[in-house]
Amino acid sequence: MTEQQWPLWEVFVRPRRGLSHSHVGSLHAPDAELALRNARDLYTRRQEGVSIWVVPAATITASSPDEKDSFFDPAGDKVYRQASFYPVPEGVEHL
Amino acid sequence: MERHEVPGASGLLSEVAAAEAELRSAADRDRGGTGGTELAAYFESVVAADQKVEPRDWMPEAYRKTLVRQIAQHAHSEIIGMQPEGNWLTRAPSLARKAILLAKVQDEAGHGLYLYAAAETLGVSRAELYDKLLSGRQKYSSIFNYPTLTWADIGAIGWLVDGAAIVNQVPLCRCSYGPYARAMIRICKEESFHQRQGFDLLYTLARGTAEQRAMAQDAVDRWWYPSLAMFGPPDAESTHSAQSMAWKIKRFSNDELRQKFVDMTAQQAGVLGLRLPDENLTYDSDTGHYRYTPPDFAELAAVIAGNGPCNRQRIAHRRAAHDDGAWVRESAARYAAKRHEEAA
Image (cartoon, rainbow over all chains, first blue to last red; front, side, top):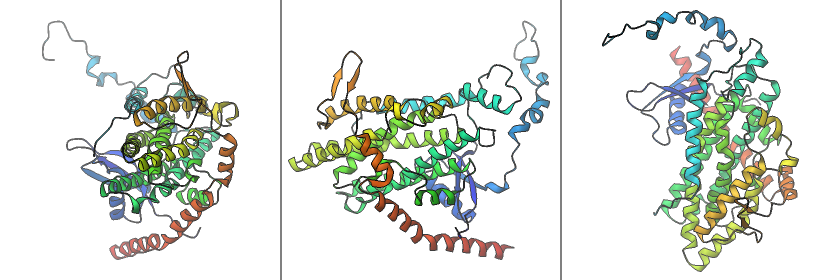
């Protein structure tokens, strides 16, 4: 096949005002403008969103699932970051 | 236009919602055991806990291949499935019916694209998938090799073919592969409109003139057995089932799903006032299920092998559409490159 494949874009949709954009899927498009239009047609045919982001998939840097343990371990032994770590003496209000 | 509730369909929609809730709650579940550092053990524990496998997780090569085959087959079915219905777009009997059919055919394109995107997360390229469809190395559903001879066929496709598809697809919302499960949740929510518009179309024809009624009955007569065949060969002859069940790609056997579809549809036919073309169709109060005549599996095998009524036409049309669109793809790519140069 001689045809060049259009680049892949990841699509994020904000479902309603006040909510954050969430990943909904991906699509191919030659440029950002067409990616946005295609995303409108593909992922919001039923008014699923009020705002769309398209991001070139190639520009996303992801953490690796293989090094998940060592990568996220540092947070594991810091239970003192949770409010529930601290005992509340009886009778204290509004803490 | 009047709206009619399709009995049984709302239950399926709540199953989709339940699958979506389950996807969230399973993520918080303790997988038990040590989880292990060994990749295969980790994969097994994720599947056992009904959690989702994600694209960059380690997975057995056979799991990946099975998913590519199944998701690609599914995507191709959506894309080829636009043809039998597209056949009636210019001849819909009213503007309202035309708008509905256009929206439905556009949905099928969308479903194909969600699924191609899900397949691509497994490391295959879109070009490779198109190529395998056109060269016959990957299949699409046998049902789309049957012709749409009358307008009533559009109703029969919505009610029976999309009805069967929903029964097949709702359990896939719980599939162990994350991108496929998420695509299926989105698809199933949209698919229920497809079935309902078909039921509505047939319901209207069944209450029309004698000629319209006869047309509706004829369409149901022709689409019933091919729809039953959509669930695949009987369990005893199904080649991929056992392993797919173990990996939680598949949740129910072909015959279980076929029975579920018969039970739902037999009841709905009564509401429509149309007859399903099976003299042996009877309710068995002992089992709580309908007895029915199985479809002709030799015919299914022949259609899958390429000898259905429309196999060659479908692929020729798909190839022509792809080739005719080449200039659009090339121009858009050229334009993007030019703008990129100008900006630099």
